[in-house]
Length: 528
Image (tube, rainbow, N blue to C red; front, side):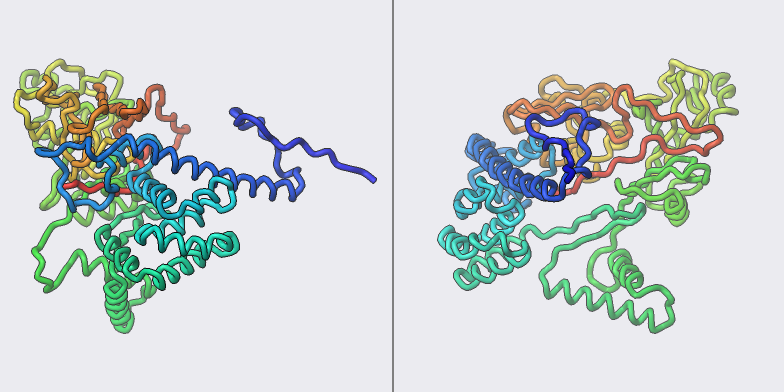
């Protein structure tokens, strides 16, 4: 009889060199199953510990410390936050966890529910007797009922929770709660109505996105039936496209081309980012539409629809060129009017000499070479004009006024593209230009002291105690929380220090060496 010697199961500190991890495929399958179950128990224990740590920190951030008077938060604009806890706590928690504000709000709410309404569930979680997902489901269903009713539901279900699927456990808890406290179900419905919103999520396919709206069940069913009827009418008229595609087209048309609905006509605001090589077909580099990636072919089709393929200003839109250095740092922005000036008026000879090789006709002060990008039409230029010390191109000059100039606003919004607070994805159209060093404290109204912050995070920086923000000349923002946690955010196009774009293979077409970032979920609208 022969026996196989298996390697010992790993124990002790976390392995830092992943190449040294043992090959799990040689383990007995019983060992693998045991380790997976042990991992679930450890996750449960960690979730309970995390909840208690969150509650401990929240207790040190009371709402009584928030500003009361000028600058105080208007009630009713957003529905996140918890009574008695500072309005700025969720932002701090999101930075500490390095997660979005919505995730931080969920973890705070469930921690409060476990402690005050489901203490036996929290104890079972600490002991690894119930997994995180089932404990989370109970907290989600019972968050809006009283502690007495939550305790009765908990007593009835906790012992069998491990034998129920997560969805079955959620349904059973909801049914029991309705029997014991119908008012809680109504409160939950009203809470859902207050937090309802429309969200845009990137799809798994480049150039596609999902538009999701949270509606009452009857309204959602009515909307879907209406969309389905109109799609079937198109199908009956001979449209060969699949019915699902027709439903999607009908939905889009109803929103973008409203008929007699009594609403005022509005124009959508799309921010399109592209490279010139992508526009001409010389590269397959992707572009962006409001921060969401799209393919190069989709990009050309879209710009052709808005008559911007020739890099002309589209009707009702704007066109801004952005000059960036080799590391992606924004050096200057200019409009087509600036481009038409063809260089420095004080050095016409230099401008003429540069004109044949420089499609932008503008001087560049980076002798190492630059890219020319455009927002809502981004142009890339590989040629380098003769260096000139005249300020034809460069960041807009500072102003003595408090309000930024139009050129400063164009530069900073082009550089930042969205709120710069860690894990916030609010687009610049819904963001303020903030003085990183306050203007009242001597901070200049200059692009090296301005960054985009959504209204909520602008208020946090201005009013919350213990926070520190620092902006470097290249636009890198360092944020320090009152607990000393530091997060760094860079402009989307700026590459980290030392990271250079890879060299293309010989004979290969140009490619985008710095694809656009995926924005985090937008769950932080301005509070007023």
